[in-house]
Amino acid sequence: MRPISVLLADDQPMIRTGFRYILEAEPDIRVVGEAADGREAVEETRRLSPDVVLMDIRMPRMDGVEATRLIAESGLPGRVIILTTFDLDQHVVDALRAGASSFLVKDGPADSLVAAIRTVAAGEAVLAPRVTRRLLERFAGMPSEAAPPVPPRLDVLTGREVDVLRTLARGLSNAEIAAELGIGETTVKTHIAHILDKFQLRDRVQAVILAYDSGLVTPRPGRPEPS
Image (cartoon, rainbow, N blue to C red; front, side, top):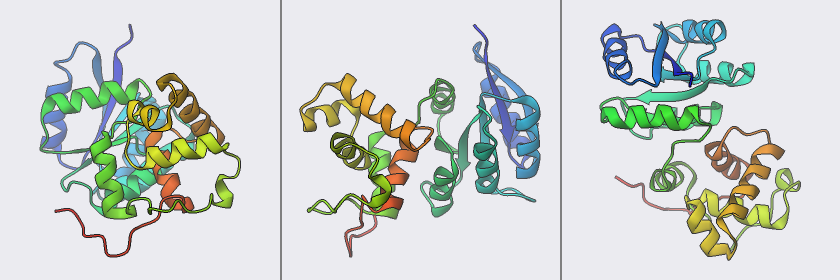
């Protein structure tokens, strides 16, 4: 089986060296290149076509958000994992909106980095339900008690797909969505796949952002920010 190819994009050489040391100890992961800024990250992604790009969010010449957007718009198969010093800041949300599949805090455990790379390379997004909840609580709010009308942008969805998107946006897992809606977990996966296909979204993270941006998920006024 072909190893997962990874590009490291960070303006600090010691950080890149540390990540390379961790990843090259894994038999199924291969670091194929490095970039010291966002512009170089885009160029190297186009040249090397890595499976995964580890992207620092703050870099010279071009930041990680813009680099992520350009990579996502290029149609290349590489998926971006954002690296950040600050857990869930606005830049992270901007990067997720731009097309990133996940984010990791730089000082997190090495096994989380390795697991995230494997998961993202397999085509899944890495945002645990609890993290999705925090994401919405801080930047989008939670859905209001009375479900708002379906926004025009979402009128291509069936009623059940709207239900699934609403529950997905609340941070529920597939099993929790199935239990709440009284359907099978396989059916939930099918509905999510249809939602992603209809809007050409990469993963469920992008679906959550869509639910917020379209107005399906609305903030609760005065909701306190989590610490």
